[in-house]
Image 1: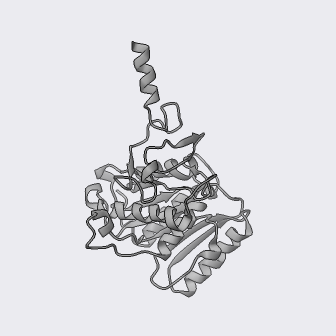
Image 2 (image 1 turned 135 degrees about the vertical axis):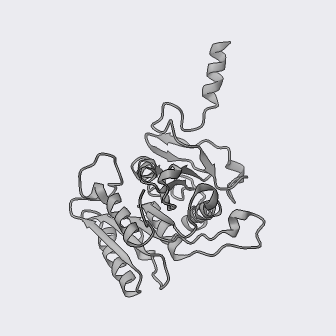
Length: 287
């Protein structure tokens, strides 16, 4: 009987099982109580884990890393991992960085969004992945008081494909619908700042006055559309009068992400991001 109970327990574990590299994560928070629009019928479908990469995402969510109250700076960052819209690289482009922020008094939220280029996917970047990104920003802002977050210090940071989502979120946002029955939809989805870490499709990025300030990090050895594209994007932001900071690391290529214990200049980019947040007035003091 005991063996049978153990087997049943294993069968009912969530997709990220105990033997996975993500065994001790905070609970994921679904972005929609009854499933994302267009994905309601697949809300209970299990995600697929391969190493530290996740796919088959049909119930988009955020995983919250909240700092202790005595270290809380009131700032929050939504992290969108990369993976070419076919998977989510949740290790070096997700949870590791969220812990880094949390240890320094900043709330971090790792986004699991629907994947537009996964095999046989019916999703698109603009309709589904962006709906998830904007909903995540609204969710964080709607719960800012409960989570000890200041409503005007909520930003988005993305890697590669996730960097595309971060850029699009900064390009197109709204103040929320004050008449919506859903309190989340009443909140703004505008990020107060943005971090683009080697994002793709920069040819699709537009720049207009009034957009959030921008931090960019990428590698000299990355594809020209990324390394040169980010240099061009920086100049377009400067021309529009929007504060921006650009780091192109001479000894880095694509996908350096964040890995604890790295000793390279590119590996230390989160420190430069923290300094930028402080210089930009978002981090007034770090306890």
